[in-house]
Length: 180
Ligand code: KMT
Ligand code: NI
Image (cartoon, rainbow, N blue to C red; front, top):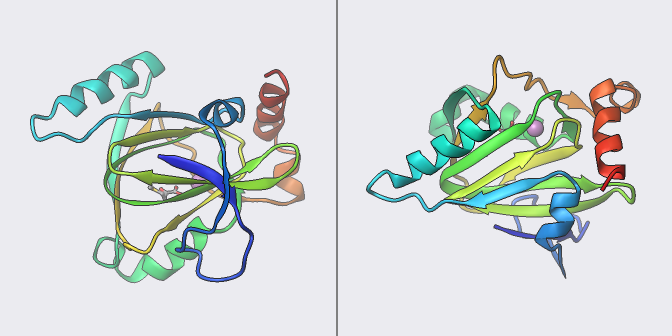
């Protein structure tokens, strides 16, 4: 996993858009973004590592999502568009990348710069509830991810606007960032 400031240049969202300025792991952590690298191995050892983190963090459920033309069918274009709208969720967004790659862009509070996180196979990322973010495939156009969650996930994307700015979960998030 590699993180850097997004260059804000126009053009295909699937390109790197690397400004050349890296964002170190501790800066990501202070935004509440957690990450691990757990290689996907043929022996299925990675499952045990995932199970352990899931136990520690109380993620009781999981499923997998296949973001490809075949995996999403007719919903493909609409889903990709939705993923790339700036939004928040009232729950953590937890993704373990089983195959392929993509970009999570997260807003760095308080300056509101986009930090681009390139996730690849074996990366486990936790975006905190309330963080503004978006997702896109990269040029490989394929990602397969395990989604972990506690109970019934509240994954409805709440697009950024005056309502999300006043959402209590957003307020809790901002308080947690300020406390760092
Ligand atoms: C989401 O909610 O944005 C997604 O599930 C897409 C990314 S999964 C790697
Ligand atoms: Ni999201």
